[in-house]
Image (cartoon, rainbow, N blue to C red):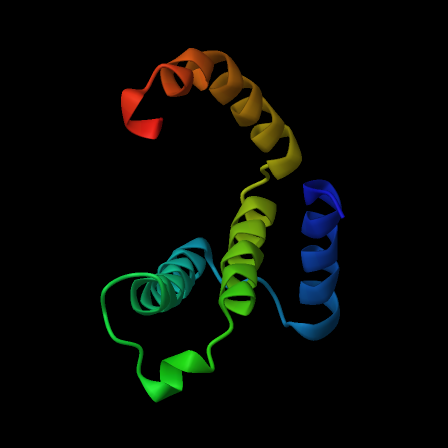
Length: 108
């Protein structure tokens, strides 16, 4: 599934299962909450914090999917073609950052 298809799937889900999109501010708050859940898993599973028993059952993939879902909602409700925006950004990063990362001594 490409990003455009994912945006359409989210929109269809909202129309079928939801009442409407939450407003942009609410979705921004939800995005922050979901990113916090991802950060908690990463910090405890891959960082130096100890993992609580309740944290071990958390599914990182599911939490990342929650982040993606809210990002797709925000794109839909603000009229952003995220596939187009992502393609432009990837092209820009490839041109701008190729030599920078290749020549970064810290990455060798």
